[in-house]
Structures are given as structure tokens and as C-alpha cells.
Image (cartoon, rainbow, N blue to C red; front, top):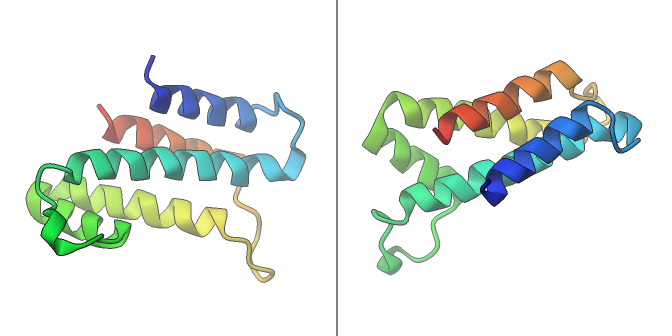
Length: 113
């Protein structure tokens, strides 16, 4: 089992309530899933990101992924954006639900296949 798969399994356990984090569980699971997705994006972009470009942001790597892979890049952008919104707390927004984060964790798994 890869470390990324282990992190996603851990996110599922958080969503199942196995660690007693209560309302913090979904946001923590989203953070794990986003970290896994960002590592995958880094791996995918390693072959076509030149060191002479400096250090491109995750957002710019996702844009480039869209240019290289089309629909997969667009799906990656949507999942990353939703996970990013889920991990940032705003007083005027509701906590992400377990089902929303579970769907995003599943999407991250599917992108890596």
C-alpha cells in the first residue's frame, strides 16, 4: 500500500468517526485528501515542469495539467478547489459535511488510478 493510499484510508477512518474528532473530522480528512492530491499533482508535473521556471504554484501546475491532459486536468482543478475551500474555516460558511468530503476523498482515489 502506498503512503498516499494509507493517508486516504486514514481520511476515511476520520470520516467514520474512529478518532473522536467530532466536528473537526471532516475538515481534517479534507486536509489529508488535499495533501495527497497535491503530492500526486507534483508527481504528474515532474516530467514537464522545468527547474528554470522556478517554483510553480499548485494552481499553475493544475492549469498546465489541464493543457496536457484535458478533462483530467479540469477534474483535478475542481477537486483541488473544493478541498481547498473545505480546509479553510470561514465564520460565514457551514462546516463541510461528511458526505461531501467522502465524495472528494473518493475523487482523489479515482484521479490516482
